[in-house]
Image 1 (cartoon, rainbow, N blue to C red):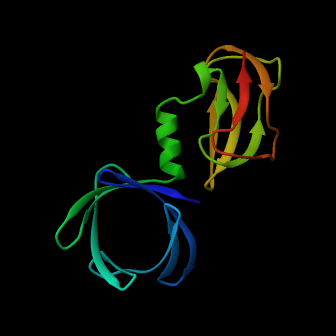
Image 2: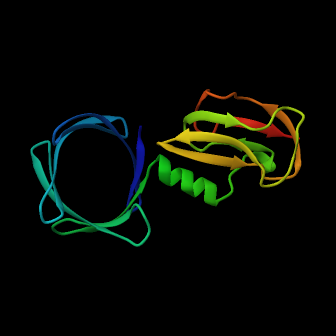
Length: 169
């Protein structure tokens, strides 16, 4: 699964395609690269790629998945936006789709349980569906009082990120 990495003003999509010990095959914005990455005893990362050697120290910020990366002459602000971080960002922003009339999951997963059916009267805050993603179960609650217009999934279905799961009237 690709993750988004922001380094300064640049954003890159990075996907781990394979690993054999410290040797990684990664795809960065569509370009395949083979790198040797080693986390050293002093906390830095030694990276070998294309005949070049890089030593990077990552210092975590107070916010999760945010770092300052120090190389020999430069420093960069780094933010890692993986599925978990995107999920937390989307949940925090209240992203429920068009005019709060849809319930969707910001990441792929599996439907554990659907608690509503078409025609049900529902209340704001009522649990409508439980999704399992990244070894974690999340309850999705009804964002507004209303009526269930359509349920697009059933228990056990595999879902895509941002797929509309339940529509409200």
